[in-house]
Amino acid sequence: MFNTGILSIGSYIPKKKLTNFDLEKILDTTNEWIIERTGIKERYIVEEEKASDMALKAVENMLEKRIVKKEEIEMIILSTATSDYNGYPSTACILQSKLELKDIPCFDITAACSGLIYAISIANAYIKSGIYKKILVVGVEKNSDILDWNDRNTAVLFGDGATAIVVSSDSKNIIQNIETSSNGENYKVLIVDPFIKMEGKEVFKYAVKEGSRLIEKSLNKLKLSKEDISMYIPHQANIRIIDGISKKLKINKKLFYSNVEKFGNTSSASIGIALDEVIKKELLNVNSKVVLFAFGAGLSSGIVLFEYNEKI
Ligand code: COA
Picture 1 (cartoon, rainbow, N blue to C red):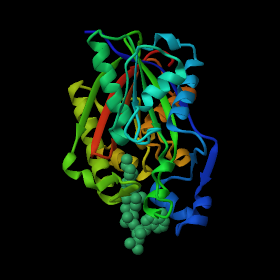
Picture 2 (cartoon, helix red, strand yellow; picture 1 turned 90 degrees about the vertical axis):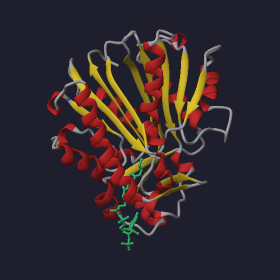
Picture 3 (tube, rainbow, N blue to C red; picture 1 turned 120 degrees about the vertical axis):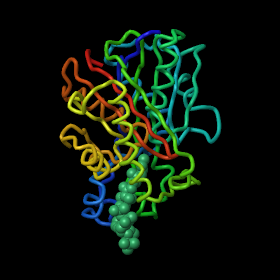
């Protein structure tokens, strides 16, 4: 079995900013309510771009770091709930065409806000078994397309964005554990048909309970204590969910990274965008153990625990 790690990362945020004050003009809501109940102050949305355009920009951002060459990519796994076309072709194939990469397998996956973790888990399995060495994993969401802009329960929560990660056997940022889990009996509490409809309180409770359970499970498997982790990077849905998990696990909330106030919930892009920001701010040291974890529609959840040893 080969080691796997996170070799490089990039991200993309669209230009158009939408503040809570902008939303006050179109919805029966207030800046104070949104900040108090969610921690979100603003989010960014695309105008003309499609998911594949955002994905391409995230990949280009990653390639600029010159850690990975485009031609080295052997597979693309893309997570999105907002593909360019309904059904098919996959947005991964459209991205492949935009990247001008020939003869590699490309496909999309659906695991909502847990999608990036699920995609990493698939890449991890391919690499561990020795089939490939470098797999591009993309999380991209054009949530603005599936929001009902008359529904204050959901419209204030989400934003658009993309992230690109290369998972590889050539990385020293070794992935030490991955867990994924689903809870299909509750599928109705968060659905897109054709817009996002959500029972917010149910999702909230699941997120706190499941996030805490997965962190404990992963730490127990590796015989690590909560203090061994330098940083927890959760899916950015609501600051109260993140605070709820830190409180439940009795972990200092300063160890939980959050940028939800700037971007809202960018679904399967959120953890990558947050990790990229953490790297840019140089918040990790060599040997830092990092926990990435997500929860979302399905219901679904997942965690990746890796050790940071070299710049991504
Ligand atoms: N502005 C003002 N009032 C709002 C509002 C908004 N944007 N959205 C809802 N409200 C109102 C509700 O209508 C309700 O009014 P009522 O008491 O007159 O019925 C009141 O605020 C309280 O609503 P409630 O649903 O109890 O609020 P909450 O504290 O549970 O917060 C969420 C609502 C959606 C922010 C919260 O449940 C949540 O974040 N859930 C998880 C959502 C999520 O992250 N989903 C994606 C996961 S991947």
